[in-house]
Image (cartoon, rainbow, N blue to C red; front, side, top):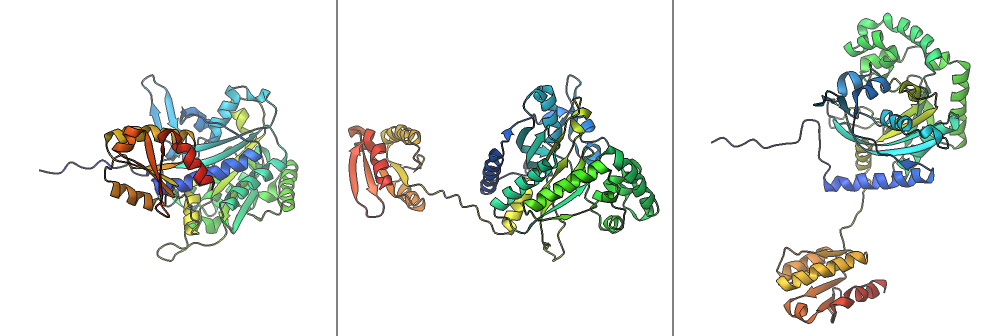
Length: 433
């Protein structure tokens, strides 16, 4: 008989196992601590949103909408999509809940899974996680600089070094329209040398050619006219302000005149943060460079989604990519499973008493190791040693009948019998010493 095939995870998806959860939690703890200082509040938007939200917000001609979204049709005939990014959903919530009436700007952060159908590779999966921030209702360039600073601070506190910010301005729809003509004219003469995707992008949205990761396309675009030379006065003044703020806070950055980001809603400032060094793959070739953070300003998105003219900007940090960077740099997350107290029990009555005693320790916020599934005292004491417990509580049949418990000092082997209702206080006293 043929064996029944094993059920495995879907292609492009992955399990985040306990060992990696330590990294996820560390990143989230530090990120939340940083953004809390700057006055950001958490917002959770649905994983499923109307497809139109992303086709309008993210951009009908973007790769995300054309190739990467997970779409479905409900029994009621609604078209929904798994969110490929946070920003359109947050802006939709801002409009829907009348947040324009709150003191501006409003500052939000989000954390959770996103979904894009694309080829799996290191740091890029079909279900992935991001930490996202949005500042809605303020157009001053200081906000752009502060968003960059916040992500830089998070990465620095995670002990990642040699960070570099790449920054550019892509102007507004007015000055960008003229630049598109200039860029199209340049690329038309080299169209046959572009990859198939970029030949399509040249017809639909030539700015997206600058975002291509194909080496042959990058060689061409490195010679292309620079948008920074075609900014209107307002966009030029705004970008100059951003750079002056970055200089003031002494944050390392470099201008990348071909940085455009892959989403249609960006205006003016765009940025990405990398580790500034070439990594090697297993075959000793330079690895494809992946941004740990990306973002910018999107002043037209609120109006595009049905709201009023509203300034907005923000950025997103890829959690899986940050985890890979931390591991590559041998940044360890030490989360010890050691517990100062271990509860050992022998017999069914002792197990019942022990279960109640364990709850008392939980209420007292004292972490206690236990192994209720084991009956052998020897195996339980081995586990106490492995956890490096300072004290082991011994609860046998006799102790259960007498309402007592033995406290054993694991360092010197001394034992003392105390009333079971006094066990928590006795341990608290010893741990304080």
